[in-house]
Length: 198
Length: 198
Image 1 (spheres, helix red, strand yellow):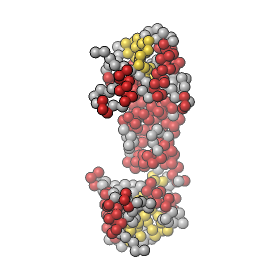
Image 2 (cartoon, chains in turn yellow, brown):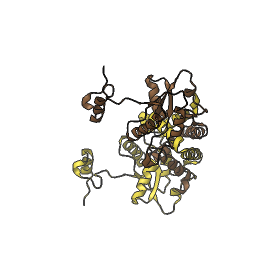
Image 3 (spheres, rainbow over the protein chains, first blue to last red):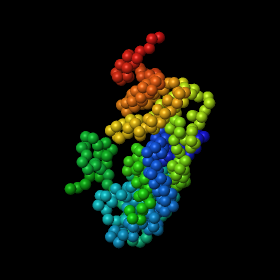
Image 4 (cartoon, each protein chain N blue to C red):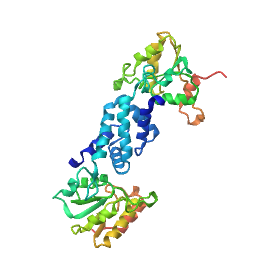
């Protein structure tokens, strides 16, 4: 290993990536050194570039290179609606629906007390300041529907309602295209409770 | 996306890694920027470091930072035995058995004509020069037992036998600890053909 310190350091650095184990890290390192040194060079530059330039939007907390991101400064968005998501990826999913025209706030995580992630880690102070700016009238909670996401939504909902903001949550129910036989009973139970008059 | 060029470039660079799709690339980029900028910095440095320093050993073709790797210069290894593997990872597996004391040659791939990988791409010229140095008397073929590995072994075997070198291949048979009921019939057929007198 002595004659291979930089290969060892590369494998160790790759292992820190989420979802990459020791075997994958080794495979990736070998692949890049054997077949794609240009790709490795690009990745090295992209990493140091991103660390230096990417920051959080002052209004919505998403990743951006500006003080305020282009979404937040867009005049075409409905200013009184604020949708709260866990990640920028979740936000992109909602944008793809074309069903939402308001603004966003990105938590960059969800409450998870067991992992030491409390209200401060997910920027709830920043969210409250944003949601109580006098322009926002409704906050749409679009956190995940797992335990952490539900707890986060509940916590935010209580905090904002105490400050007189209307709070809503994405509807739960049977997915579009699903056959009831293959839907879990928890989802069906929720769809029964939340049934809509037609 | 305009305000996020460096994040976009990072995600695209991560997608070039083997086994990383668009969703994983995005998840890794978000994770590093949100939770592990130090890890991202280390990876950036490790990549540029490895590209610059890692080369191929002049004797065995493995990755090394020297002209000749420490394995090849070790006086404790049997100089007349040469084991041929596809990757440095395969070599490490054989080393872990402690059952082999000779030297190695690493192909850095296997023959795969359909992918445009011919004898030149896997350094067969370098292997022939190495194996016909007058010291090596037996070459042990330890390429994989899939189609590409078998074809590679066959090709090398023919070439070296024509030059008077003894060539052997790792034994095929039932894995240690296996119950016959759960072993595939191809393996059992091979174990019958290659049965050993006890």
